[in-house]
Amino acid sequence: MNHPSTLHALAACWSLRRAWAALRDTNTTTDDDAGTIRSWRPGTGGGHGSGHGDPLGDAVVTTVTRRASTAQTAEIVRENVDQARWLATSALRHQGAPVGPALATLARVIADLDPATAADVGRYLDHADQAARRALRLDTDHWPLPGNPKCPGCGTRMLRARRSNPNTAAWPVICAAGCRCAGPACPCGMSEQVRGVNHIWSGATLNLTTETEAASA
Image (cartoon, rainbow, N blue to C red):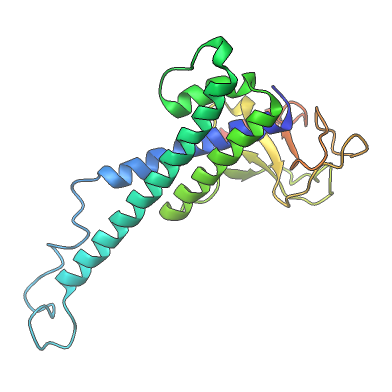
């Protein structure tokens, strides 16, 4: 459960659950005319020869472009999630195919995957999460830790909790500097030290759970 590849995959899954929900909300909004109708008012320059362009036409183009962009992003997200689920299902075939909504299912079964498969699943989910957040201009789910402690691996003060999981005790902690584990000789203190993997810890490993919960209250 605390293998770094497992923790990364779970963090990406929870982050994507939030971002994908926001993306679906954007694509299913029906009462937003994006200014297309209400943009026109007498005297706003909508007439011919005003020299101010056509606000109604511009708004229509902007709306169509934006919806096409989010629809394209949604397709990218779906493709990556489908691939992640296929990998998990193939790996767990002997246990029966996981059923239910894709991300909820993945959140349940990632801990049962071998580290290599968890890493592959995590990459697909992370790619989808980044695509959704770019399209929506959403920040990451990274949250600075109280007291700004040093990273045990590289010494920078860029430790961040990934807070998408509603269970604050399950928030993993990463180093936003992107430092990687050097293997058994690494001073990082990860529960499993794997060369080349970006550092990540469970809150319990760094003894930060209590502080994180208090700060998020």
